[in-house]
Length: 315
Image (cartoon, rainbow, N blue to C red; front, side, top):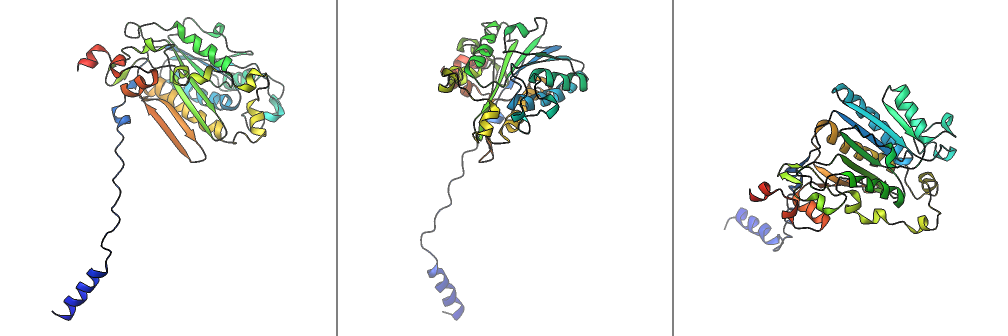
């Protein structure tokens, strides 16, 4: 054996006999590719009601204002109704989108002036808690944006969905609820139209279109359960949570971005394929939940066949 051959064999012998095998690749998630697009009734005029104009709400109002411009340019009508019982306080400055000149003013009125008068948008303000009295009966479509921080207000938003038809296959829902909320570094955005599970029967008219989704309260029933602080009547405002270091400085803006994107895809680009997303600023992650029959059926505790239209199920 030549010297070169002996050297080559020596190196082979020194290699580890059992190397750690490479881990199997994670299974490919095809939920987005297989997801259906959320379809609303044909509309020419939409009313957007923003309930809660504080932490998330003030950021959301700015995004909605930009969106309204696009809707106008597309030749459609849109009205923004801002709802909040609170007034701007000094502790709000810097953490919410208000300025010193607005201290003492109604939050709803301050935002309505900013995006109505200054931006030339069709806005109205309601200084009080949300109620169905702010609904405009002649609108083709109504989108409720919940930026509230208590179970009572979310319950009122949820109750509005009782006006939607019992069978979405015969008449698609006119009222939709886009809810958002957060803790210190985390938050969630959820979209839905069905007050109860039966209103999701046959929601997937085909594999690529869904016309009804479970309301945020069906997705997370705990939204309607008052917390201990609410029961005791000592609930903390968004600004107080931030001041107590119980809420990070940027979580409200991060949640508003996700909610605004879902709203834009629902009303303008018509390519919304997710019904819920979770944000974690500490890890820098956003996890979306997509509109597949399996996911929606799981949310309401029914078999997948329940949410499929008969023709879809037979295909």
